[in-house]
Length: 398
Image 1 (cartoon, rainbow, N blue to C red):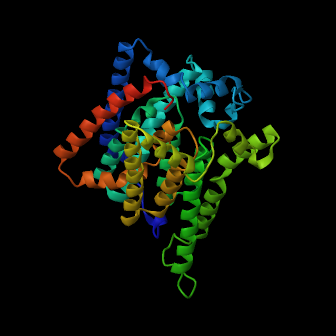
Image 2: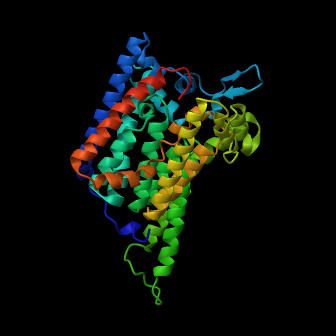
Image 3: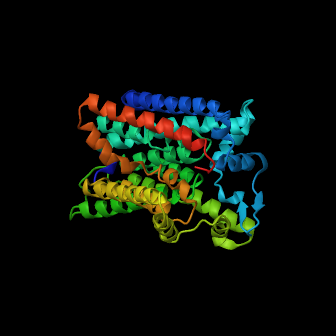
């Protein structure tokens, strides 16, 4: 954190050449996942493309793109599912694609997700490469690709778009590009509620840089670094901080005005979906209930091990002294995913944007022989493809 403004990022062409192996590997994993999905779906007489573009959240995004906000479903138990719960950037992009091409809104969502997933993979590589080097960057991208729920990266959902914006915002912070970081954080805040994690990372990093500037100042008032405390740098940092929260705050305030319920109106919308932050109480009770019978107890053991793994990876990242913006971002994304009273089957995909959790594993893989790491990632890729095909052909939303 002490030299964010003095670290030089490579040119765009050089950065793309450096990331090429990671992007090629990522594309291969995603192609394998899509192939498995299409074969599995065909065997079950289902449309794989429909599973990717026209089920669950994808339908809600398309409705926003086609009809705007105001659509809601009232359930028999009194719950109200409003499309105001879905942030607007993905529907805006779907509408843009449909306006400038013969593609439908659903097609646009699929295209945006495909492009965004590649941008996200490049962003993950850029962050990991910056922190740990190129080999770790390649491993981080491939680990993100072979997550059990990696197929979501190809769905008309907002996870890929959000991860791309978050990763590149974090990279901009790490390289001292404050206005870019703030603009990307603004866009991330228009994509998902967890965009607040990106905002927090930008703000914490900026405040830490201000503190460092002040502490590094010499008694005469001169700066120890010719750029770190320059007025232009401070102004760009302030501008980045100003821009960062505008997306999330703007949409939340608009929802409050639209519903007539004030600044907390968005929380009421989420409550209609039975979403809220309860500190993990509902999720903990869900896990405990798994141990009341067999074989559901096996699922309970798996959930406990999964949560323990996530916590262990975060603690390992702290011990490995990951940059402060990554720790802040990852901590908030993880806390919101695990401690929200949302649909429990969605928690794995809610954790997917927390890619810095994978950095300790990427670093470990980067230190092994290429043949061994390739074998491990190849086996994980096949398992991810099979699981993704099985998962999407199930009954519940991912």
